[in-house]
Image (cartoon, rainbow, N blue to C red; front, side, top):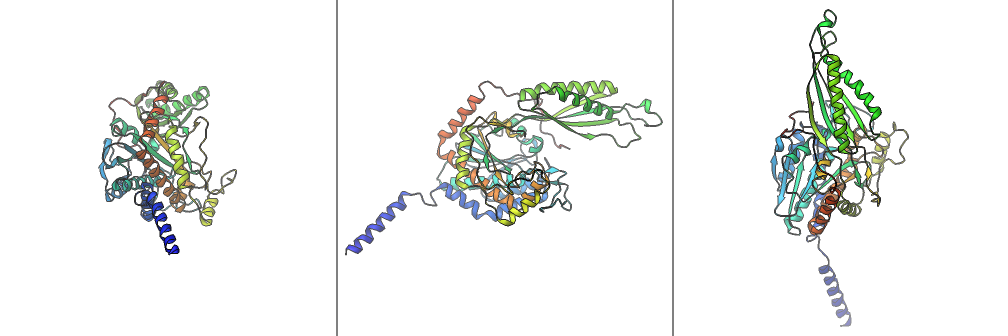
Length: 482
């Protein structure tokens, strides 16, 4: 009898303990993470498709459609072709507040044809590649939004999740024009991530950047028979580049100026009647970009005068502000990174990554990073990259992080990144990112006070700043970039 009573007592105690803990069904993170794990093969397939297509900015037709179809199949309402960009979209699920946005990117880079090989090997039929890891970026973000949807559908949390499909990040176009069109206006906070060689919350600034094209018009003539009757637009481009190279000596050390000649003429024996040069101008502060842009334009006009040509167009396609990091959201992300854990790689993956590093000097100490980096207590660091996420951070609380998806120390926009992103290395980081985004979003739904704190952080950061843009008022997104 005593034994039976003891057994009953133990059973009741165990039942009470189970009831006191949230079940897998009632815990929204368990449901969200479970969806990601169960659908890993689906997400891998989506990544491989986008990686294979490798479509550049504003041309991501298949990639955008792939993500839209995935979201539609999982109950999202999708608005396609927004802000005048056929490959931009917004996918929504849920009702009411809070509204949490998740960003997705999916454009590739030109000139980075690379197979999923540890050797530098062009992929047949490819002219571009995901040298910034955007194939896993867009896939993980879409997977995270669907994972959040599981928790919303169960009633465990309330609100709306929006997945923003933002094209042409590499040229700073997608988010900027979507912002100008008011597509983010009802969002309370935004979460994003990026492929990287570390798994870490993003506690850093980026650089502000303007993307501008200068087009010159001259007069064609036979370069040998009648050179005196021609006016070379290419001369204007080259004179401008000389002037800008002298300008470099007198700008702040954080400034970066780089360019490509997009049109230099047809053939040598025809004086080029038209020419165009495309500049990226960066600095730590947008105010400096504004100042240097005036100088850049003055040099362009002077080059036209020296070559007796005309500067017929100064086209600003993109103007990106520096990222303003948000401490509250970074801390929420850090907590979820530590909960999910960094990706863990096997010996085969480490060997693959190590083989891609053989030309790096010095050879990195690690093949792949497999830890979550600690969150610094110091002020934000200054990064050297630029992103159109920056413009959003001037209007909304935005939290970001990186997950390890490629070999440690790989240069940005490199064949090494393309190679790893098309393998299980990139996809393991992708799974970590999807869970971390979902977990951070769920924390914000469950604790609206965190959103309010994030808003207060942004308010303090913007106290002495005002958002301005060099993009002309009323200008719509360009139809093409190249």
